[in-house]
Length: 196
Image 1 (cartoon, one colour):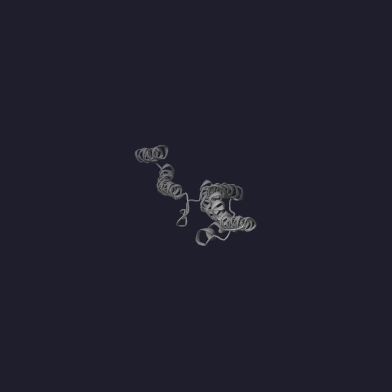
Image 2 (tube, helix red, strand yellow):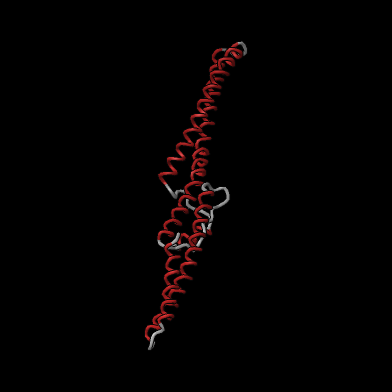
């Protein structure tokens, strides 16, 4: 595993843009949906409430004063929307990071696996997305480690038998029965490599 990958597994994430294009696109979709919902609900509320309030308040306030009250209410509604936008942007980025961080970690692990490194498991933070995918990859890693152990043991056994066979072939006179037995053991061990 790369040094950066080790540090990233154990340290708290400090970079929020890990998969920049994905995160910006994802955050924009979330923010757009939230803003569109806010605009629709604001317009619906405005169309439902303000005509009613205008009608009721027209009898209480003089016409000029009523316009000032309505203008003030509209400005406060607009200002509250402007104040909420940075929170929406931060929330969208936070949500995108819950996917992009694990995605990045999974990519690093798969790249390490492609290079033959199966020495560590994927550990995601609580609340991160893609947990089930990480667990599936961890099961694959465990399976590959087990197969590698079996192959290493078989190779070690084959190496020992080959050394015994070489010694037997060099011996005068060679014991043909022993050579045939060793060759038969080696063929059996090779069959294990070929079977899935």
